[in-house]
Length: 379
Ligand code: HEC
Image (tube, rainbow, N blue to C red; front, top):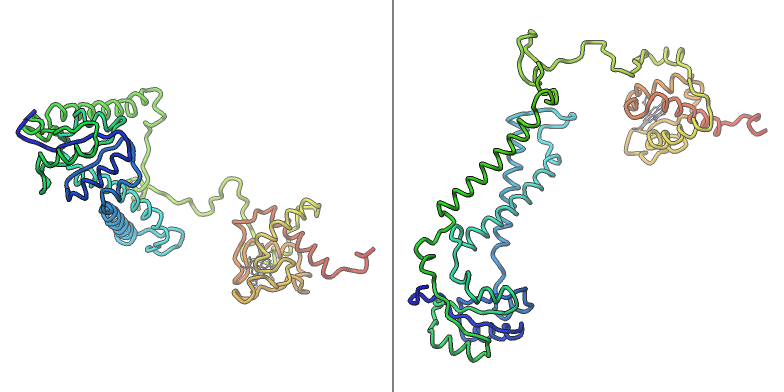
């Protein structure tokens, strides 16, 4: 301990009220460089010390804006210049798709830079020593006492006056705190070679053992997860084909497993002539048809297929399905329109399965019958 280098004069109190009172008294006496240490946050302390709002929030804001703008610019560069790809038919600059990543990176950079600047600017990294460390004062205030410490570098500081002021506040103890000589000699113990060697050792051990586990031990033959195969990777060139592309598209006419090709593409008349509804008009089939009709068809054609949907006026008006034309169509024609679409009505083949399409046809038939009932239906 260096008796010549005074850091501060400290006083310990027993109660939160005592420390608030002491903080007010020290503030009123005009001291600026002092601090209060308590085992838990004491309400009213900010006002007692007249603390201003922390400036850390501005760093957080700046870091968030910087990170957000940076990653947005980066994604835009990737999609516009570095690797332009048409995804789902959307334009290259589809900014709504960038929002989730931009949001995440905004939060991430705000958090990381806030903590980083807290450590560097406020805690003065890499200086990890402080004269209050390891003092009886610090031991007390981190368990059950409340302390105040007036620093010697305060412009108004005078050891005798400060000691007198603190003593007048009925403290438990008043004690000076001196700089530690050893800490003064090499302040930055963060860069102590032994400590750095330990860090490097831990880093090498952790990464080395992780590497051995995940890349060697888990892949000992023969339990190598079939990772060792002769194969070509996508997006790499190959000499095997003239166009050097490794990713091949399926040959013309390839049919996926379980997929039945539709033979009447562009041939509504043939569809009407040859296709027969394979479903019986059971109550299950009608119930299925009703559900699917209300989901996929009613938005345009209306709940009763009368062409009076809620989209009327916002979309070229879809026709009624109760026209003589559609009523006299064979089932296959309706199936064909759902499968292929017709003019501006799109195909519903990808949303509605084959079976569901035929169920819808039954349901449309039931609706048509309901609105044009025959005499015999009433009996
Ligand atoms: C996006 C709106 C929309 C949806 C959804 C829609 N249609 Fe259509 N549909 C139309 C339009 C518009 C026409 C008229 C097309 C034309 O101009 O030939 C039409 C035509 C038809 C026709 C032929 C009518 C005629 O007179 O030529 C049938 C049958 C039909 N739709 C059935 C259905 C069925 C069944 C569904 C549900 C699977 C369905 N539509 C879903 C908009 C829609």
